[in-house]
Image 1 (tube, protein in one colour):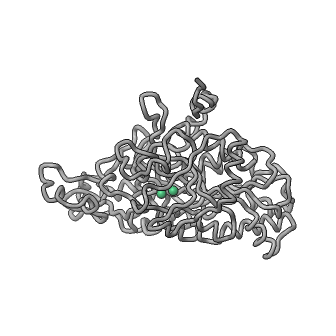
Image 2: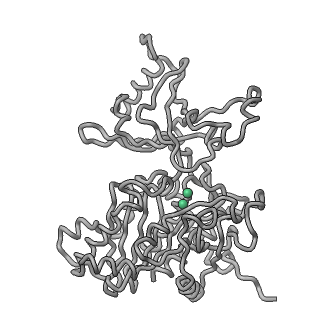
Image 3: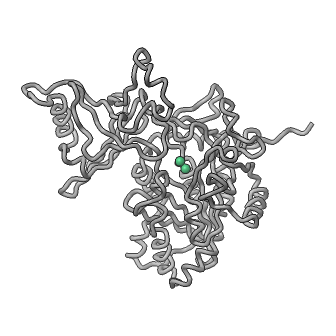
Length: 455
Ligand code: MN
Ligand code: MN
């Protein structure tokens, strides 16, 4: 009998494990969009990349093989690998997002309630609120001070650090809570983080809060009002871990969509000499509708592309529009993996399975594909051929059964510019939960698939 080919038995296992260990470490160290940009920029610099601003200042025309990057307000990142063909022949674009669901601190977060110091949060993105109570949380982010300085915050990651969290009601007094719908059992307004309980000596009013403010002043130089100009995210504390007795998976926070961001990043880093210019766009704000100046709806991508065309001596508004329509895109975002505990939401002929490789979603959306990018058959045929020639194991899926729910990615936004686009990424379990799960086989095969696409 012929042996069935799987990613596990066809792959160089040493290379697969090494890649996934790099990914696990990256994931542990990159829990916010800003940290993601900072850590990738450091790797880019180490690999000899230069910023677009530096290239513009030098006035030098980029050459094939050059690695050039530009960040957008430190929260989105665009990376170019210059190809042998002229820019105007079109580009190969990998687009992922680097924001993930979490609890953001409000602008006036700190208060005291019966000798406990608490912090108010406003959740970001689609979360099942009950999943975020009783898990250890860390605070990551920045405080921008009036004098222009930035204070970086990261509390709860070192083994010696304290952790924080949101409490839940004890089962003994939960008769009322347990009779509610799951969506109402924990409310958004109740996702307050407990941060302290010792009163400040000699202080009469709100002494516990006063002591927390003392600590923040002493350790970070920040005051109560400084939270107004801060972006601090409460995220699950601790490292991403190997998952499963056979260590075949990774459990970590923010794999939607840093698993596709990292594999896209590595693909463009490891691609020395492509035919077409490759671009990796790592966008912020996907989880709240790709809004704001750093979200995919903003014009930063077109602006950066225009700058690059100017450097190459080929910019005009018309050439830019033409270039966009000649560009092929993989919207690299995660999809739902089949979960044996919840088979009822999937239709088994059209769903993604863990370990069976990156997954094409021709469309996402909900209620009759509404809001989706419905990729062209011709483009999918082109990609099928590319993947087969590259020896990639891949699968196709829908996001659950018809009318079971739905979702979206940045695919439709890129398609609006006239590019060929399809969603193509890693299937995960526990999507949007504090700890999400991916298969190492899928992570590695996705990286290989992105390389084949860019090449
Ligand atoms: Mn996503
Ligand atoms: Mn998501």
